[in-house]
Image 1 (tube, rainbow, N blue to C red):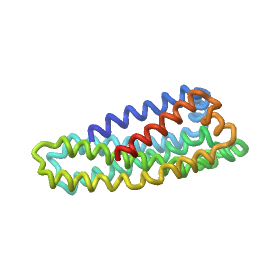
Image 2: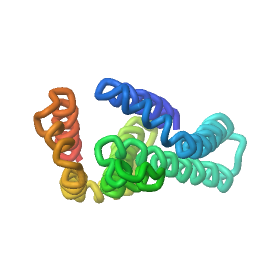
Image 3: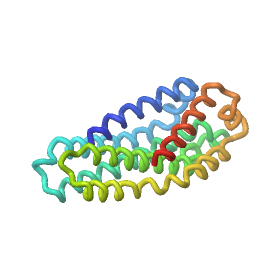
Amino acid sequence: MLISFVLGALRGVGIWFTSIQISAATIGEMVFNFHWIWATEWTFFCLEVVSGYGLYRYHRQLSDRTCLTLLTRYAVAAWMSLFWINGILSWQLTPGDWLMTHSVMDGFFNPGFWPSLLFRTIVCMTLSALIGCIVVNIIPNLERADRQELINKAAHLMMPMLAMPILGAWYLYSMPDDSRGWVLGGSPAMMLFFMISVGASLAIGGYA
């Protein structure tokens, strides 16, 4: 849980830092047009923090059932936070009909919404599986058979990773021509981030 908190904070800051470097003006438009969606995301973020911290701080005093309930709430709130923020983030490169209608729903459920949501969900599952394997390996006084059983169970979360190239291509195809051109060489910054993500995905897939 502590690892999840720390990595989540670093990655959250990293997302907005990257977005601001690409286009600070877009962040202003995002806040102006999607503030209610952002507020909805914050309600789930608050539930995520409270559930996660409650489990981390009081798990020794709570029953197994209560701990599992808090963990389930944490996981659901984290994914719902991802769901709402994903629509805002994907809108930056695939605004779709929003350019004509300026409708919040057209902007949120943009052409890149579903491929990016599925892709990010699989990334989260893969990272959680890898971190789970690391945690299992550093648990002291754990028999080899028990360690292997836990690692095998965690490894099941890596299986959806096989769909990542397809989802990545789907998201790239959903972009308008000019945005796709930026990613494929028109913008050095976006091309760099794209190549870093491809390289990181290949490295993680190879390790898995």
